[in-house]
Image (cartoon, rainbow, N blue to C red; front, side):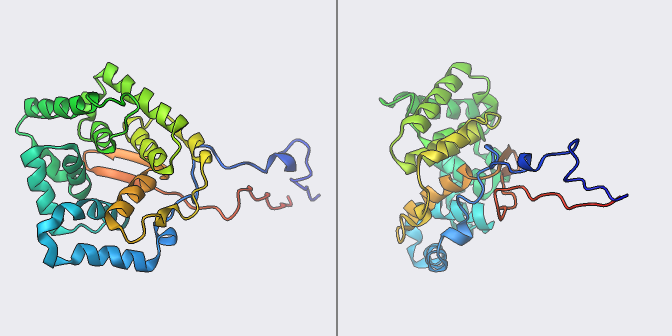
Length: 263
């Protein structure tokens, strides 16, 4: 005799099959290919490919990092410049950029563990001197703490608690979208096991945010790097680089009803 599974009271009820978006998944808030115009991508590519402007490579670092994250393309001239600067001055922004552009080269920055610890302390102390701390979001400091310096950061409990407190405060209270995505991106890299961040996206409408800095390529790349990290389904940090995973974007927030089966 045919049995209607949907009508069986011992099975799942129809009313229980409509579910809301999972709170730890941020489907569709930001898709670079959808939300950034083709002409903007073209302009960004032209900006990086302009070899008549090699004396200003520092302005190309952030756009190069964004393109590497999204497209997987690495600009060799920018990479060479970043590697030189990371070894020479060991600042958080260049160390982070090298980690994205060529993670296998990061180990060459430090001669030994002692030198790495000195760089960690220098970057940490620069952050601690900020008058706005603990809720001062110096994103590249946070990014390096959660990646290159994670072995030291995870043992530095007091500093780690300061960073966590500051980021939560910023996510809860900031009045600007830019500061919010900076804080969420930093939070996700520093505290990958803490799943409290998705709730803060509801504070703003994100429509058209990706093109807010249209024509200003360094600022556009900067904000969208944070946006891209903040909206990933999964952020994985490893010695082989930063991996951002994006799931399938569902056509509907409703779970489809099971098909009727006959047995």
